[in-house]
Length: 248
Picture (cartoon, one colour):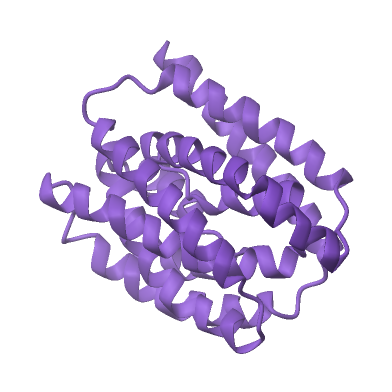
């Protein structure tokens, strides 16, 4: 069952350029009864492996913006380190509501957003990259607190603020979530929160699913990706609201 969970997470994460934690965390907590504070570290371990498995497929197709990757990775890593460090001491109910509101707004805006011309993207990198990095930092803190993969945050930022094509945003994100996930994973491991009985099976499945998902993602049509992202963001937001409601 853990391997199947990893395969599904790898397929979804590799296809969209996100980590796959949206599959892993609910499965481990709802289906297997694992505590949320143990499920999140396992999810982060799988995210790192999924990044390695899927990002190479995007790189082969030239679907990675190296400039954005470096800047946003640095911002996300800092945010995720802070968020994951606060996981054990902070009540996340209000944070979940804030992140849910952001995701619902992003879901609607993403459907209306359009890809920009190359010259507009180049101009936006000069004028809006700093804003994008600040938002990625804040998003990293929130993601680290509630165990949501950074891809759900950083892909809409790159598409809506900078204007890069969705394919490039997903390919770049596949690298970013790997680095940011590794930062959080290190914090979890130091605190002894990584379950060595669950993680290996989930990771094995993620390797299988991530490679296939990454290959499928390079062929995906933008309209299909928008619809899937809209549904995924809405689903995650509802789950966060439900979780926060039970905690507050």
